[in-house]
Image: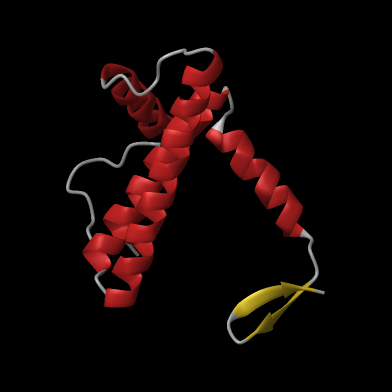
Length: 116
């Protein structure tokens, strides 16, 4: 259950993903670059992913649920933008990850799933 339920209709994932990509293009974050400029662009976006997941960790440690929700959303935004820069589909990457874990044999050790 979400901490902050939206008052209006909830957008579909595809609608949100499209809006994030449009926003990224409008802000100049999604621009085709070549060579070393492309590498700098990818590194910068990857660092942004790390920054947002760091904020998520901090929010969880503080027990701040509104900040946790915001940080999860911010992390997703940075990953969607990184996928767009790499020519990947966020949804396809998620499906690949799910298929990899779906039938994995694991055991729970101190609250962490460990591969058997």
